[in-house]
Amino acid sequence: MMTETWHTLFGMGGYLLVMIAIGVWYARRSNSNPEEYFLGKRGLGPWVAAMSAEASDMSGWLLMGLPGVAYFTGCGEAFWTAVGLAVGTWLNWQIVAKRLRTYSQVAHNAITLPDFFSNRFHDTRRILMSLAALIILVFFSIYAGSQFVTFGKLFGYVFGADQYYSSMVILGAILVLVYTLLGGFLAESMTDMIQGIMMFVAIILVLGAGFFHAGGFAGITENLKDFSRFTDIFGVAVPADASGAAVSGAQVQAVVQGKPQFIPGGADYSFLSILSCLAWGLGYFGMPQVLLRFMAIKKTAMIREARFIAVLWCFISLFVAICIGLVGRAIFPGLFTSVETAETIFLHLSRNFFPPLLAGLVISGILAASMSSSDSYLLIASSAVANDLFRKICKGLFKAEPAEVMVMWVARITMLMVTAFGVIVALSGNQSIFRIVSYAWAGFGGAFGPLILFSLFWKRTTLPAAIAGMVSGGITVILWKEVLSKIHSLLAVYELLPAFILSSLVIFVVSLLTKAPSEAILKEFETARTLEI
Image (cartoon, rainbow, N blue to C red; front, side, top):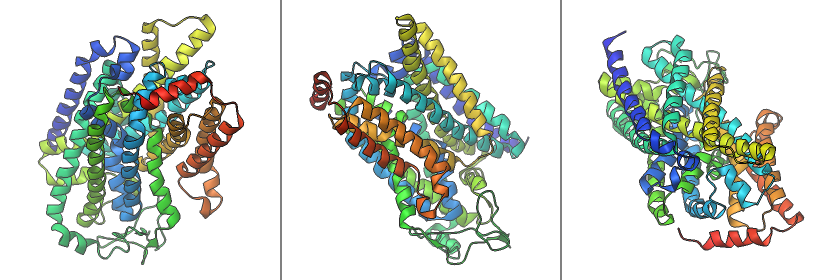
């Protein structure tokens, strides 16, 4: 192995050791009881809450998936997706954060999202809790798979050999599992804050270096001018294969004398396509890894500061990530010829423009992104199974609360199972991080997003409506993605949008058709609406 590769790995290894050390540091405190382990006893400050929410949210998608889309087809899809996410981030912090923080405490101190849904509607049979826990388990397993794909691509690129992909997927999964098992929510949140800073610094450094090597705005514009619609936010560049036909699926873009081939004139980015991209913002209302930070912040007075930090980080990071893709295409126009390989443009720029040791630290920004998301997925999925499903089963069968040590062990076993399933997803052959994330994102946004909003802001929402809305949203995502979107081009919209709309309509209609909530539920609603913590 070349000396440069060893230096790069040394920089990355140093970063990993620091993250694991933090997990060990918080292990004793975090493993004391489920509330501490799963929610950190609601003790997050504004910086930790904001940065951990954004780092766990953006994942390796920010440094690989989004730049990859911008590199391959230009501004269109990447720009409108980023706009949707940026606006969604602001709305979520502005509308949901404070009310969820107070309501989750009023609702019998709920420490997980399924727990909140169940307590909010006084669901004594725990139907809502069980459904929410199962949805979390399924979609977070898919989400975890997307992050393990990131590990595989990252280390496969560093080693310079695709045959290392499978081994690196498994190694990355083990590393995340170990340090999540050690520290719990508090350690995860603290490391996520560090990783959020690491991600931000990394993308700024890479863009700055790329901008300099491309010759500034003039050089970038000159190099991209021949690629039809590449910088047009209302258009999309269409890569072409050797026959001149549009590239689709696993097909490869043709490169002639170093120049990548595109369909002349590109294509218009339709209103439906723009709407699909903007719909990404709706997903935030249902993202457990973000909502859990709202529940864990120490004081509602801290939310304003946390919102400013989170939104600023998000806006800048998304813009810079897109620019990295564009700059990468300007400097290395014919280097990557498929969507999957284009997602390594950040890595390529890092290794070409920085000394090996510094490149290792910069590339650790991707490790930071993937680890900060993966640990959140494992922790939330384990809390859903252990704190929600397992407790329910014990109460139903044995009429007693399970021992806290048993709950903790069930959580750890669940983490192991989710990790294993995530590895299977990562090795299944779909290696586009962007596409895997979009599916899981739609799942949570469609199933949980409308219910969160109705739960927090409409007191007439009923338990049957909550169940119907959650089920209809989740099923619509799957059916739309796998069946309906393939019937006609007019139905080829991002599955989150129809799922969100249908779930909202179902909740509204069923609430009006069923018995009004009890006085106790209405009283809790009013308390949460006015309470300052």
